[in-house]
Amino acid sequence: MNPEFNFADALRDLAASRNIDENQLIAAFEESLQQAFVRNVEPNKRVEVHLDPKSGELEVLIIKSVVERVEDENTQISLADALELDPDVEVGMEMEFPVERERFTRIALQTTKQVLTQRMREAERNVVFNEYKDREGEVLTASVVRMDNKGNVFVDLGHGEAIMPPKEQIPGERLTGGSRVKIYLKEVRQTNRGPSILASRADEKLLDFLLHQEIPEVNDGTVEIKAIAREAGQRSKVAVFSRNSNVDPIGACIGHRGNRIQAVTGELGRERVDVILWDASPREFIRNALSPAKVGFIEVNSDTKEATVTVMPDQLSLAIGKGGQNVRLAAKLTGFKIDLKETKAVSDLDAALQQAAQELESKQATSSSARDAFEALFKDSKTVASATPEGEIELND
Image (cartoon, rainbow, N blue to C red):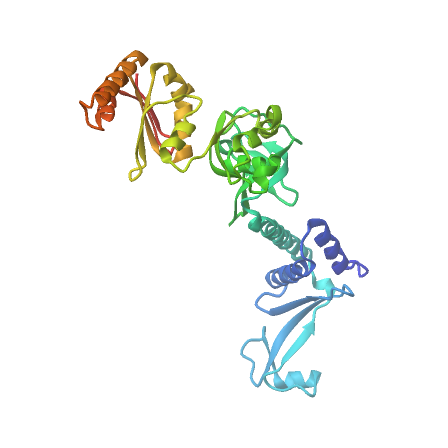
């Protein structure tokens, strides 16, 4: 071993390059060398290793307790033998016996290297975990590193790496190595194999962040985002509300010629984002959520969170949407199970309304006649689509 070699300087440089605490790395080095020396050079003996962080001097000591009668030669020394080395020693004291450097065998140093490498990895993992454990729920800009054969995308966060499994990716989005993208830090946890950081571009929180970033009225709280329902890469619905009667929440979100909402969709692979007006009335909120379809009578059960919506034949395809997407997003957005029922033709509805109006005008009917007329018209209507807030949908022919 080169006597001029400074372990402390080497460890200090290593700690700086790996962003590891210097004292932790020195402690790990001392412990790993102690374990290697006991295992390969001085088994069953009590060994201590000390590295002076300033001078770089490395010292390996065998520790023995002073006793009247020796029962274990590996860890004890008799008082008589101890007095020959130090006249001031007493029973119960401990004596240190320095080990010559030449006794550090090659196998001991190799073991030290292996253990130290492991400790260094653990220290690096702790650094990564501590860096990001309190940043869960943030949106960060990351660089795409690679993809594996399972479709997982790995991104570099700066001081660590996160995994983005297929379900957290935007369907159809092609990410290449070196691409910089915004990701939502969905989960950070410590595992036996180190920190596990889950990234997402499909989460609703990423859309929420982009809306706050691109729309000043949302960022300053003038316009409030009440709910978001998202099917990443395809379509999203955002319910907004303005606390200022002079501010149009939908117009503020869309921007002049759509520039604000286009900036949001541009970050999401041109995903369509519908901005709708939130309403405190569940009935009106559901009506708005089903836009661009124009729906008719809505019956709401707030206790069971269920709603039955009647739709004219010419609006039915819009209300359902491609593959049921429109009604499915509306159910997610409002939190209501929505049943769509197809009504009779407009001419039949007009006739029912005229009849109810005539009866009321001639005072031949009670005040509930108009509702009775509606119920008579709708009672035979069949349910053509049902969607739940969990995303389940049932389409009937």
